[in-house]
Image (cartoon, rainbow, N blue to C red; front, side, top):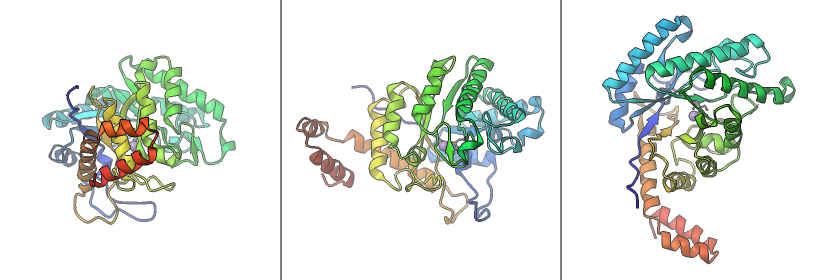
Length: 347
Ligand code: XUL
Ligand code: MN
């Protein structure tokens, strides 16, 4: 038996949020980036997920030199606190140039903007101390199918990926699939799509996936099966654990909040397959409820981490001989009841 995995955890500064939604304003005071960094370690987190403009605020107003200087300062803030930058993601959905998409925009000038911004993110990632780039392809899709040529779009996404791989021979690209929101449909909705791109790229060893529980649920898929598929291809670079109550807006609920059994199965698949043994982070992408009082609100992060660790215990204390017996007898009713009782703590 190998040593039990010592899991390490990450989240993004956007997970400490002001509580705005499309129907109303902020309900909490903003917290500065540096003050957020102070909160990580006491909460049990050592990894920080970044967008490019989380690292360098007002990125667009700065020269490349100024941006890199700022990224270096942020690196020092992380080093001082024993924090590790997990990845940097280009924010390809906010600027006006990305209204119609990034790599798949119908405007050649806007497509070039998306490439330039992605390459800039790579420089920022290197300056803040990570080689990992996450691509959440937020606006690579359409509201109506006729608006873009989907075949051309697929070619353009692959071309952009290759340009990024060429630009820096050491970076890794982690694609985070999501089927909708903000788009009606996106072009990279599942891990199958993401890994097809990885294999089609000019350096498949440097392209893998990041799976978010809520995104898989929005695609009508089981997050643990999505994770298992990526693990089978040795391409699960990270996860964004959270939860989602059915097919609606992306809720980013606390891990396990809606479906504890689904959360158990995600932890089971990760634990059984040695996820985390090569330093992979257990990433969270969770938002506090808008209604929550307090400043800053952190319980959604603390609780999600604890739920993960309680579920690790549930996986480690799961009676494997009973599991084997049920499976050999093809008694899945028995297995089903056993799991439920184990989760309820009555077995
Ligand atoms: C969007 C989402 C993003 C990515 C990083 O749904 O999950 O926060 O994780 O860009
Ligand atoms: Mn995410």
